[in-house]
Image (cartoon, rainbow, N blue to C red):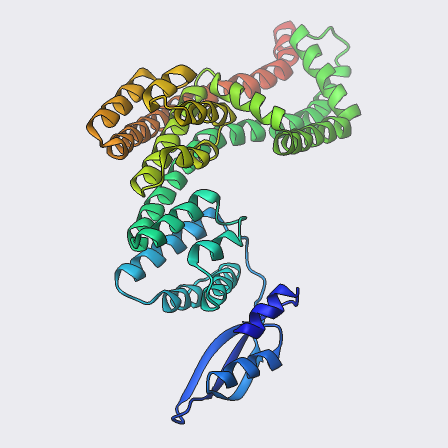
Amino acid sequence: MANAIRARDSGVKESIFAWEGKDKTGKTVRGELRAGGEAVVNVTLRRQGIMVTKVKKKVYRSGRKVTEKDISLFTRQLATMMKAGVPLLQSFDIVGKGHSNPSVSKLILDLRSDIETGTSLNQAFRKFPLYFDPLFCNLVGAGEQAGILEDLLTRLAIYKEKTLAMKAKIKSALTYPIAILAVAFIVTAVIMIWVVPAFKEVFTSFGADLPAPTLVVMAISEFFVNWWYLIFGGLFFSIYFFFQAWRRSLKMQQAMDRLLLKLPVFGDVIRKATIARWTRTLATMFAAGVPLVEALDSVGGASGNAVYLEATRKIQNEVSTGTSLTVAMQNVEVFPNMVTQMVAIGEESGALDSMLGKVADFFEEEVDEAVASLSSLMEPAIMVILGVLIGGLVVAMYLPIFKLGSVV
C-alpha cells in the first residue's frame, strides 16, 4: 500500500492489474490492484502474505463517454447494495464489472482502488470532478461524517434521477421544433437549388411576363445557386461560434440565460424547471444536515441558469449576515410568491427541507403539464408553417402554368 501511494505521489502512471495467487493456507485467491507496475503488485501482495502466481495488466477497450445517466445509475446501484449490507469495496466490484460501458467500469474500479488504499469515499469522488460535482461530493462527505451514507446515496440517486428527467423534458420540448425547422430549411434549399432552376428554363421559353411571386422565388433561387456555399458555410460557422462563445464567455452565458427566461412560450417552462432544480437541490442538501450557507454554494450552480446563480449568491450573502432565507429570497425578486410563502412556512415550522421538496414536486408537475401542452400546440403550428412555406413555393412556381392555361 505504501509503495502504491509513493508511486502515485511521484507521478508514476498506474494501471489496473489482475492477479492470482495463494494465501498462507494454500487457498487460491484472485483480485485486482492498481499499481505502477507488476513489481509493485508482487511486493504489495507479498507483504499481505500472498504468494503470487500470475499477474496480468488489464487493458480496457475504449467505451462511450461517461454521461450523467451513467453516474445516476451508478449512484442508485451503490445505494441499493449498501442498504442491502454489501461491503463498500465489494459493491464497487459488482457495479464496475457488470457495467456495459467500459469507460464507466474503469472509472468505478479507479475509485475502488483509491478507497482500498485508505482514501475516504468523498475524497475519492473529488479526484474526478468531471463526473462528480461539489454537490455530490459534499453530500457524500456529510453522509460519511454522520454515518448515514446509505440514506444520503439514496437521496442523491433520487435527486439525480429527477434532475435528468427534468432536463430530458426540456430538451424534448425544444428539440422537436428545432429539428422540424432544420429539415424544412434543408428541403427548401434543395427546392431552391435544383427544382426551381428547372422550372426557370421552362418559363423562359414561354416569352410572357411572369407573376410577381414567381419572380421573387426565382430571384431567391438564383441567390441560393450562386452563393450556396456561403449560406451553408456561414450558417454552420455561426452556430459553431455561437456555442463556443456561449460555453467560454461568462457574459454570453448570462445574456442568453436572461433571454431564455424572457422567451414568450418556452421562457415560462425554463423558469419553472430552474426553480424546481433550485428547490430540489436545497431540499436535498438541507435534509442531509449541510448548513444553509454552505448548501447555497452548490445550489446556485445546480440551478443551471446564470440569473439564479447570481440571485443565489446574493441570498447567501444576506443569510450569512443573519437575514432569514424567506426575506433574502424575496429581495432578489426571481421567485414566485408561492415559493417564498412555502419557504416561510417551512422556516417557522422547522420543516424547511420538507416544504422545499413539496415546492420542487409542484414545479416538476407544472413542467410536465407545460411540456405536454407545448407538444400538442407545436404540432399544428409547425404544420401551418411548413404548409405556408412549401405550399407557397409550389403555388408560386405553378402560377405561370395556370396563367398560360387561362390564355389558351
